[in-house]
Length: 129
Image (cartoon, rainbow, N blue to C red; front, side, top):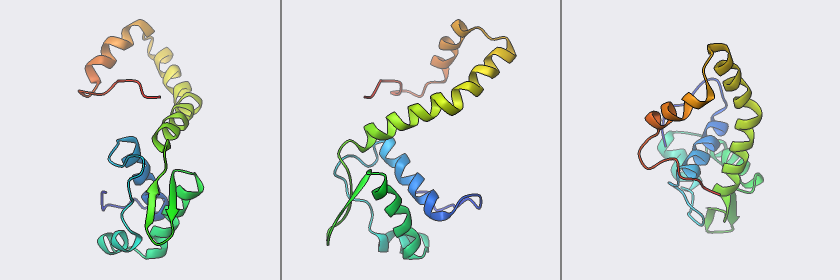
């Protein structure tokens, strides 16, 4: 995790977002343990309650489960659910802006795939369910 914090968002929310990114990037997969609240708090010099609040958001969203006395673990299907949610968010919030920019610039939809392929990182682009 990146130790730099942005002043625009509460730290607990940034922590939650970083764990989500780790799940999406498959750094954390189904069944993996999250770093302990104490370890994260000590490593990043955070209040343990801040870390716990970020983790609790993940629990509330069903992405992480608490196992009493053992820690917190990524739930089965967390990445699939995140991808579904992120895709829906993109289509509802981001795509209209992208489509408007495409229209404003007079670009042709047929030209976009060849440019997108040039920008694609190696090994990315495979479809996930």
